[in-house]
Length: 362
Image 1: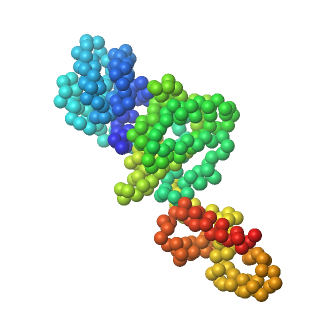
Image 2: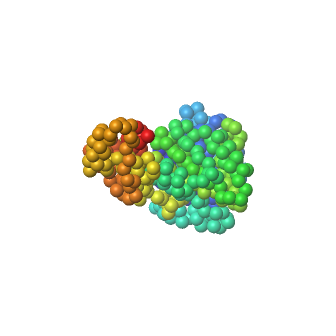
Image 3: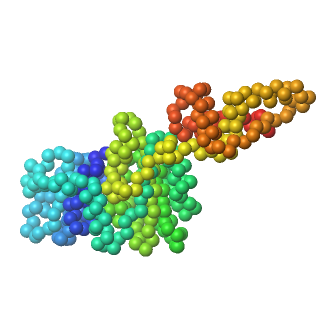
């Protein structure tokens, strides 16, 4: 992900004391010939604004040549224009009319950038985005936690897998905003580890920093309303492929949120979000206890002496949820230790036992 924390911080800071509009940034990786020409036309027209060009390294040779031709033309014109920053990991400062830009340490600092972001919002009477970040290891129960603790019937869920459909996302925003008038608007992003994070971070930057989302292909546009504040729930995926901590993984794949919501992180662990004990879990634990203390053997022996062999088994309910968890965990450890220890496999194992126990309970 080239759009890392450093890049996010620098991009936000070059606009000085203003929040950028979407048209002040050219994302070269998705730009066409017309996009490039329109962008430089804006640079010439809005002389008092700052502009930035991103992802130069991801352009085709033809489009890059077009970009540099526009840059040469802009540099040769006699009329003044505002600052224009070119972001590249290659050495392009040797080009005529381009000069390197010294980046101050504070411009890379996410905490100072977050403080500046809040100041700019306050100065423009914009509310601070209400963003709740939920992260944790794979299968720890993040989805279930969000759906039971935070979301309600007014919350729209958006799953982002290996492709971000910007048109569909904007349509969701517009539809939800038109349907709900009095209650707070809320949206839950369930993000897959296979998501295109470069594209996703770019969209989130446009939404939360620039204040709008635009889809050039469909012409759809969404701008967040000051009168109708939104609440965002972000489920952060995790992979241990690179031996990173949970927080390092988060900073790498979604750096934009490390800056604009630095105080709203919540990590889900086995300690703060234990296995939920419902009717199925309690029944499984009840039979596991009977099996463990051999009560089930005594009952089966008694039933075998009865004339009615169809009598169903019954044991006293367990009211202590911690006791239920312990019997379930002990069973997994003793008989399915090869299973990964996360809630997805735990619930699958419980469901497996529950279906079989139901044969004995009727």
